[in-house]
Length: 152
Image (tube, rainbow, N blue to C red; front, side, top):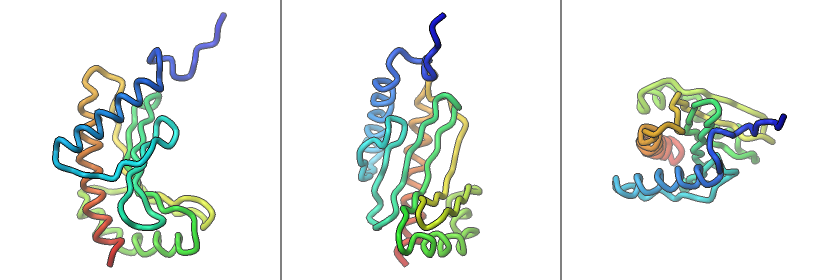
């Protein structure tokens, strides 16, 4: 008996995810957003720049968990924890501006810290436009809100 691959839901997981990320970038441009999409960080993570050193946004799709997420990532560095703490002090204002509670993960100065919003969506379904639309809308909100708090 052959073992089933972990990502056996699609014949070619990499091709599926590349196509999915292409839909996300195309939808963002069609809606007038000019995000700075970087390269794929593994095939399930897509990084977006926000003009702030040591900080980026990650789009993550976890198809085996039917979960997608947008997260602000604070990269390890000399001032990483200070950046996180400064944002955390303004948590209520940030969450009010975004419109919901976020998951806050403060880590050591040697590890990435995250501020994350997740949604249960089956991105594999035939109507994956829900996942694409959520990514674009949430990314736009994160960029707008966090640029205000990161640049003061």
